[in-house]
Image 1 (tube, one colour):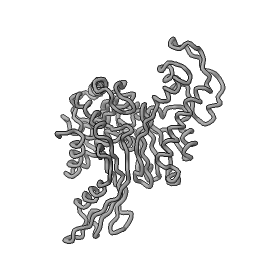
Image 2 (cartoon, one colour):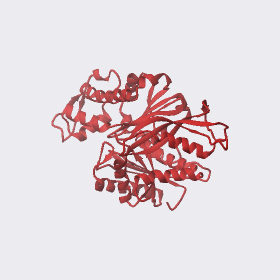
Image 3 (cartoon, one colour):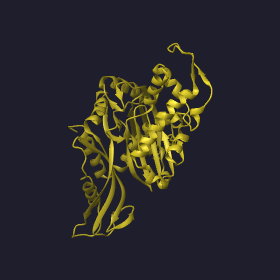
Image 4 (cartoon, one colour):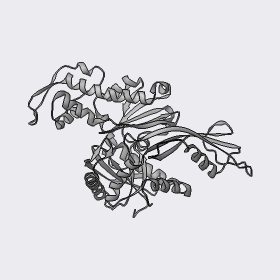
Length: 403
C-alpha cells in the first residue's frame, strides 16, 4: 500500500462482495474511511465458480470503497470460507535444550511446529494455528511461557485448514483485479474479532455467521477457541425453500423472507395472510403460517446440524451465549429459535463500533469485512517481531506460488 497505516478487508461472499478501508490513527485507534459493496455473481456456497464474473463484482466494490476513502489501495486481507474449511485441536511439546533452562521464542515456535505435525488432507493448507493453553513441566494455566524456567514446553492449539486450490481461486480473483493479497483469514476468525471482546470469550460463546451460501461458526470456551468450521447452507437455501414450497419467483421469495417471515417458536401457528402485489406472481395471497413453517424448518435444520457438528451439549454448561450474525441474522425471531435449539441464551450481534460510518455497525451483514480490518491491524502490530512477519509470508507463499 502507499500508506502503511491502511488496512483493507475484502469479503467475497455468495450474495455480496464487501470492501472496507480503515486507517490506524496516530493514537493507535482504527477508523473506517471507506466501504464498498456489490452484488456477488460467480460464487456458490462461498466458493468461486466463475472467476471472470466475480472479478468484475470485486472491482465494483473496491472502486466504491476507494472513492469514499479518497485513496487507492493495493494490498488486501481476504476472507476464506466454504465447506472445505475444517479445524482440529492438537497438542505439541518440545524439550528445552540442555545448555539452558529458560524458555525462548524459538521454543514457542518449535512447539507450534510440533503440533502442526497433525495429519490433514494432502490437498489442504494450514490457515491458522491458535494457541489454547501452554504447559511448562506439566504446569497448567501458563499465559505466556517466555522467560519461564522449565525443562519441557507443551501447548494445545486450534488448527484451521482448507483446500489449497479452492482458496487459490479466491486469491486469483484478487490478483486479476490488480490487488495483492497480504493475508488470508478464515471468515469465522474475522467475525469473532469483530463481534467478541475478551469477556465474551471468557464467558463462553458460539458465534454463528449465516451468510447467503454458508454458515461459518466458531466456539470459545473458557477464553479459547475450541471449534470452528463451515456448513454449506445459508440464507439462499431459505429463499429457495420459499420459492419451491410456496411456488413463488425467487426474487419475491427473498423479499418474503426478509420482510415477512418469522421463525420464533410458535410462529408456525400464526394467523392471517400476506397480500401480494407482484407482477411476477400469479396469486395474490400467501398464508403467513405457511411462510413461517417453510422458513422455520430450514433455520431450525441449520442450528440442529451445527449443534450436532460441534457436539454442543457437552460444551453447553460452559457457553454463556450464542451470537448470530451475517445477513440472515436479521430474520425475525431467529434469536428466539436459536435459544430453543441450543438451550442457551441467543442474540443477534453486529460488529463492535469503531470510528466511521455507523451503518457498518448497525447491520450484521458487515461483521466479516469489519473483522478483516481488525485482523489486519492486529497482525501488523505483531509484526514488530520478524517471526510473525515470516509466518505470514510463509502462509501466503503456500497459497500463491512464487511469492
